[in-house]
Picture 1: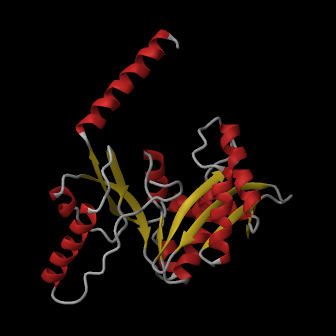
Picture 2: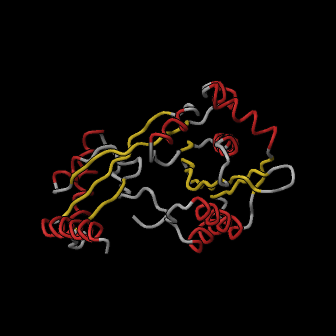
Picture 3: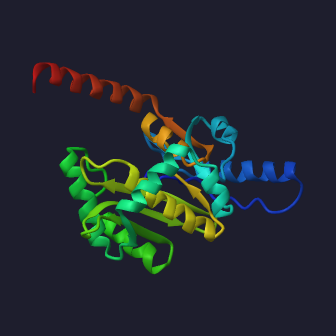
Length: 257
């Protein structure tokens, strides 16, 4: 998957007609697209919500599995608030007393803040600063992306999130907070993003569940679990070469090289 692209897959217009005819047409279109893929050792994509089944991929030699995400459907703000976990609501209330939420209009400031927090935590930096900067800028000028920042009384940033949206959904793409801070500021920012999203009549998509901790955290907002299918295909040579490479790396670690 390209950097900062969490869902892909074919976009298919199967036309009109009955549901069975549309299903057959959709499968045929996807089959023809798969036949046009160039020969590669390995192929893997996480499908967008429009791909509800993967049988046609399996029929063409792909394996499939499911990842999961949380979604909050658009509704009245009070209904969403009431559907959240008490602990999450309390965190947001406390954060309101401590922080102010504003838009962050400078993409470079957000990218630097994101990178600095990653470095201070000693974590791996998955995205390069120019990519984050460019994406924030391009979505802002199209009115399809927003950076929110939580600040203390003296104006110091504590946490920030970046989310983007299309005609149907908003996606929680990036999040960062200063070292030794808790999740209350991020909870407040997410609540502001959810409020904005639902005012547009859009679904708020938490954009995947990466760990047990994120699952527990996202559950507090009262969303519904939704599958996102992942399809993959590897050649026997690629699988064998991967196994050999992994064994060589393990041997080098044991030898201290």
